[in-house]
Image 1 (tube, helix red, strand yellow):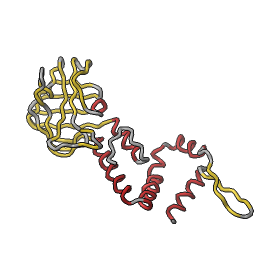
Image 2: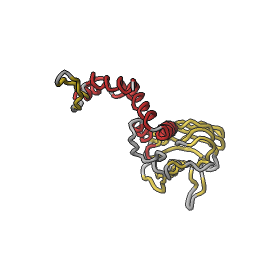
Image 3: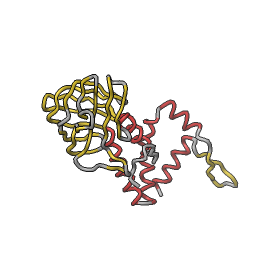
Image 4: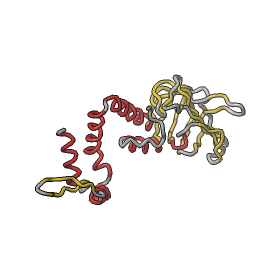
Amino acid sequence: MVFLWRFVHQLVELGVIETYNCWNRSFFKIEYPKNLANSVIEKGVFYYMPQYSIWFILCLLVFNCSTFSTYLENRALDTADIFTLSVERKVAGVNIKYCISNLGLQSAKYGKGYGLRAGSMGAYSTGAAREYYNSGNSFILLNSVHHHPSRTNVRNNKSKSFNESNTFGLGVFDWNGYNSFTQCEFSIGLYYGLRVGFNLAEMGDWLLGWFTIDYLNDDNP
């Protein structure tokens, strides 16, 4: 109760809740949060996230422990979805994936990697044979990026595997993966290599996820 009272007290200070007296008794009245809106504009949303996220988490813990456990699990998985950092072998050349497309000079059809990539931790393949071309290889005229985890990685029935191919880095075709268009990566190798990156959509999903907004619909129920 002390935590909840302090939380209400902070809302009063920001003007989200206004106090007034009636017959010598204090009451609360909910008002449109003009002061809060102005404060967020002046100081930025990240100024308020540390202090208000803790109260939100405490409320979840008090009212429903099972919901709180799932909430923390989804926040951890959302964090993993953002970043890519892995080592690879049987990869030669350079490829840059700039969100909606990719371009490079790289052979990665037989490549294998290990690390964190697109929300999956562990081993994965960087290429595969397709019907008309080899996915994972890039030669400017025809470029492709491929990701397939060795272990099935699914969140809320959405697979983390993806494939994206294009011509001259512009005409995208043969793509799959619910968030591959916002995946940005840089890969370099000379048999052994390194891949780093991040996902713009997952970054927004992580930020809003702290307030239980899941616009990618990938949280586990």
